[in-house]
Amino acid sequence: MTITEQSAERAREDARDARTPQADARDTQPDAARCGCRHPAGPQPAQPAAAAGPAEAAEPPESARERVNRRWHEILQETRVAQTGVQILFGFLLSVAFTPLFRELDTFDRVVYVLTVVLGASATGSLIAPVSIHRFLSGQRMKDEVVEAAARLMILGMVLLALTIGCTLLLILRLVVPGVLAEILVGAVMLWFGFCWFVLPVRLRRKAARRVLRAEKAHRTEETG
Image (cartoon, rainbow, N blue to C red; front, side):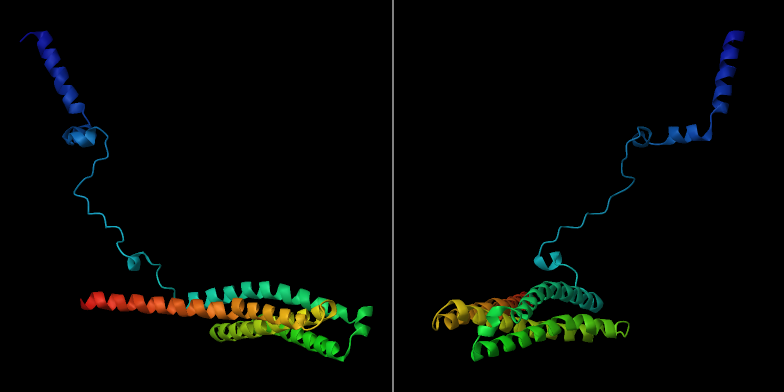
């Protein structure tokens, strides 16, 4: 072996000795790792199948605390809407007594007016009562009782508000419509209020209850089958 070949062989040996452990590790890696591709290191778990039925796609049931909080926020929103209407109507009724036309009302119309003002004041008190109850009982850990009382007062306030609107219509229509047509129009409007505010919600509630019963019956049938 010549001196030149010996020098080349010695250079190759020095180069092998100078290689770092990281380079050796890269050489020992498989081709997929050296190419920089993100290949899975092992068998991947099977992906869960998509929800196949309405029961699996349904929302998770809410806790008792979440339910009472949701009901309370809903009552507050409903109270804001109802209070706006009853306050405007009550303000109008209070101003009627100071108009010159009020002195020309007969006894029956004055009785209707007094009854309307009393109903409007009662409706205002019922619709504002949930706020007062919450303020007095805040921090007493009685939110369930507060929500139940507020819901009942809201229903009572809506009934009183409907009666206030009916009496207001009667008072106004008796001045501009002759004969018994005023009473007929007021009766028709009150029937419409009763259907929209009370009959329709009850029908929807019963319809939903029947739908739930049919779903439960079908579920039990599938389990037994």
